[in-house]
Amino acid sequence: MHPVKVDRTKARPKVSIIGEFWAMTTEGDGIDQLQRFLENEGAEVEVQSVTAWILIRAGVTIPAPSS
Image (cartoon, rainbow, N blue to C red; front, top):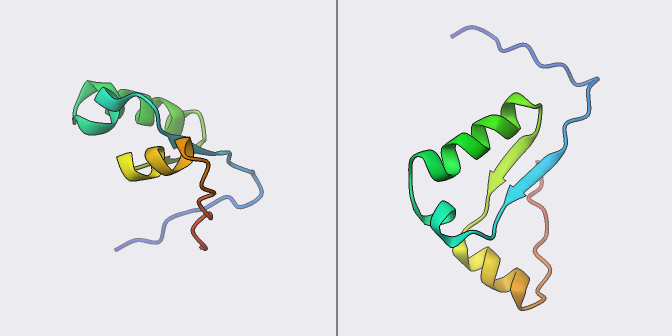
């Protein structure tokens, strides 16, 4: 395996995709093109589960995963 170059001098916005039930529960064009577009624009994309969407709608704060 070859090392991957990472430029840590550029801030990348972190984007969570939640909301549209169809896009979240299907594979293919619905979510893939949106995720690919955001990544090509420099975003770090996190696709949220339906459970996360329900918790957010209920007002529960979901802590960001530590990296």
